[in-house]
Image (cartoon, rainbow, N blue to C red; front, side, top):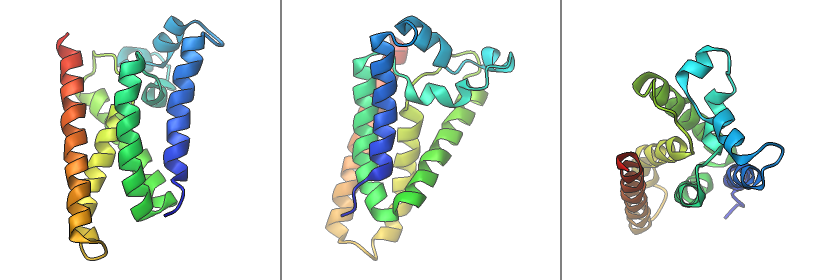
Amino acid sequence: MRFPLVTAALLALVGGAYLLSRAGWPVPTRDWLEWTVLFRPLVEQGQWWRLASFHFMHADAEHLLANASSLFFLGLILESRVGHAAYLGLVLLAMLASTAFSWFLLPDSPTLGASGIGYGLLGGFLVALPLWRWRVDRRAALRELRTAAFLLAVYTAWNWGDRQS
């Protein structure tokens, strides 16, 4: 099994952004959140970096842990199956899709976190699973599918619970 280079880099970016924001470097934590959240009215005023930056910032440790665990487990599975370049493409596609989703369906809601990447990776996994049946043990594929379904359930419950409070 190859080292999951893209998964490790993605987790380093997400974790590093969180640690820098909590350390208050180079700006206070509140400023990090205010300057990275995706909020359509601010993007329309020219703050284009928000289209990508919101994926890497998290509101608190619980938020980071939920997203990082999904990125880790799905990343291990997918990157080992499709390779580094294809997995990086899938991550970038997931980022683009989640940005578009937030832009068009949640135009007045500030958005923050890597949940969209996780959902995109899960979608990639579910699309690729039938293709893997020919190359991998069916039991292994079903175990991976159960893992993905569990992560989807936890992810969705966490996200919906967060929106309700």
